Structures are given as structure tokens and as C-alpha cells.
Length: 381
Ligand code: GDP
Image (tube, rainbow, N blue to C red; front, side):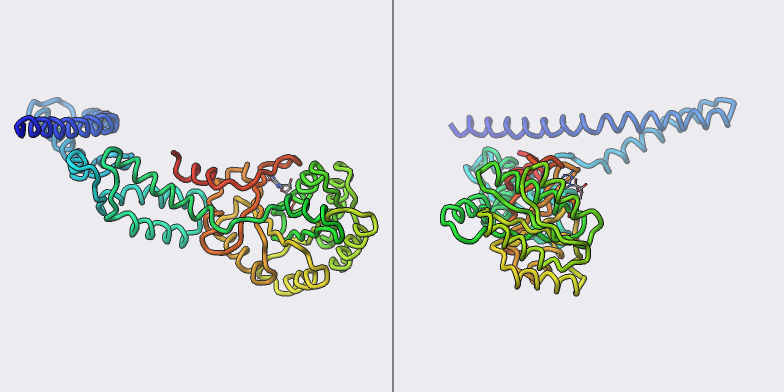
């Protein structure tokens, strides 16, 4: 009986080694062929220069070719796609569960590090994620049947956990509840840097609320950026919702105040307050924002940021959140080459939830935040 088991095991190991060898050969052969072609071209060039042909030189060339081939063999990376080590695989063939070693996880984590940075995750956050995963994975026992899949799943689960943190507010539900209760209109303040998509997102939210029977007024309180008031008015007209406008340079807090009074007088359900774009570092504009909040007491403050913003986004969210507590983030322009990795930075480092993604310029281009979409972008299943 033992003989049979031993034979099975040795066949299995041999099979594994052969498979690995074959895979390696296939990957290496393409590059080797290219390198060999290059060698031949170089030799041809040299031949042109050094006539006539001589037997001794021909032999030397063959020797040199072989030497280069051997050297290349040594420097080739084993595999491009990560996998667990052969030793772990062998253990996996014997045991039901296998302890994962450092060498098993390193290639996976290296690939993850690159993927995180490529999807706009803040550098420090990426390092933290990789290091936490390293700590959690090394020594962990996984089912031996599918080790590679198991490690990938562990990584995906861990990303999913971070991305599902900070459960968000349901804007629509809150607005509906307020409408059912009657009384004060539901007030939403939108803030963030210039050009992030605040006015466009307000129009998208107005469209969504209207589609759900929530009637709103837009407060065009960006009295700073040229054409911002007209832009808000154009959206309002297209959507057939009311808009309250002031003049450029006017106090934005007073325009929002008027819009709230208008909503009360006309029994509207919600007020969507636009603000001028500002950098989190501009002290006087941040003070102005605080005044806006003090005077108008919004129910919800939403930060609008660009999904394509890299490291800066996390600092913006942190500092706006310090100035006036944020209830959520909407990331725009996810349709423009953004993978949503910066949600990982926000969710890992702050308590602010992500609510929606903007995925285009149309009114319907707003989708609820979905952590799975981000995980799939970072590490496809
Ligand atoms: P604001 O300065 O923050 O009010 O930004 P705007 O609403 O004026 O938007 C700036 C630009 O971004 C405009 O050209 C918008 O059409 C565009 N924009 C806003 N949201 C999105 C989005 O989700 N996807 C794309 N592709 N463009 C967007």
C-alpha cells in the first residue's frame, strides 16, 4: 500500500516539475528567439566588417552564442503570473491544508503593489495594505487544493473589507423620509475643488430625486467661477427644476438662505446647494464654507472629487472633513480612465463613506458606489 502511495506521490511531483518546466520554456522561448535573432544580426554586421571568413572564427562564434544562451537562461524570471513555490505545492499534495510561506506571498503582493499604484491608490496607503496583507497571509493555513486561487481570494477579501468600511448614507432614502415627515426641506451642500464636477453632479442628483418624486430647487451659490450661475440655470431649465440665483461676488450663504426660504414657501422637498470650488489649503474660502454651514445648517455635506485625482484626493477629503464634517464623497469621471482605487485611500484612512460614482456627463451617469467594481479593477477575479 505504501509503495502505491509513494509511486503516486513521486508521479505527482514529477508531473508538477514537468508542468513548471514546460511553462517556463514556453515563456522563455519567445524572448530567447528574439535575443537569438538579435545575436545573428549583430554577427552579420560584424561579418560585413571582417572579411574574409575563417574556420576558427566560426567556431568561436558558436561558442560565444552558447555562452550567451546559458547566461540568459540564468537571468530569466521564472514566471510572469505569480504562483506559490514548488515546495508549498508539494506539501499541498500531501496535506489537506498548507501553511503559506513568505516566498509564496511575495510575488502576489508585488503584483498587488503595482496594481494599487496604477489604480491611483495613495502611495502610503498602498504600502500599508501590502504590509498588512503580508502579516495576515504569511503562516495562514489554506486549503491545499487551490493555493494560488486561495491567496488571490484572501487579497480580494481584504480589499473588499476595507472598501466596504464606512457604511454610507442613502441620500434617496433620507430625502424620501423627510418628505414623508413633512416640514423642513432636505438640504444638501456640495463642496470640493474647482472643476471636480459639483454643478454637473448636482444636476444628476436633481434628476435622480425628481425621478423619485422628490421636488427640489438648486441654489446657484457658486458666485465665484465665471459662468457657474448660468451653468446651474441651464441644468435646472433642462431638468425643469427651480433655481435660485444671485450675482457674481454675492455672499453664497445668503443665496442658499434664499433658496431654502423658496423651498419652504413652495413646499419643495429638497435644496441642492452649489458652492464655489476651492482648494482645501485656501484658508479664507474654507472659512466662507464654514459660514455657509453655520447659517444654512445643511442635513448633509457631500464632497465632490475627481476619480482621476491621485494622491491629492485623500488630503482634500481629510481637510474638508476637518473644516466641515463630510457625510459622503461622490467621485466623478470614473469613465475617464479612473479605476476607483482612490476610494481605497479614502475608506482606509478616513471615516467618510463613498456614495456614488459619476460615470459621464449625462444626467443618468451617476451610479451607487460598488466596492466590487473597485476590487475587480485592482485584482480581477
Ligand atoms: P465644478 O467646477 O466642480 O462645478 O465642475 P463642473 O460640474 O462644471 O464639471 C467640470 C467638467 O467636468 C465639465 O465639463 C463636466 O461636464 C465634467 N464632468 C463632471 N462629471 C463628470 C463625469 O462623471 N464624467 C465626465 N467624463 N465628465 C464629467
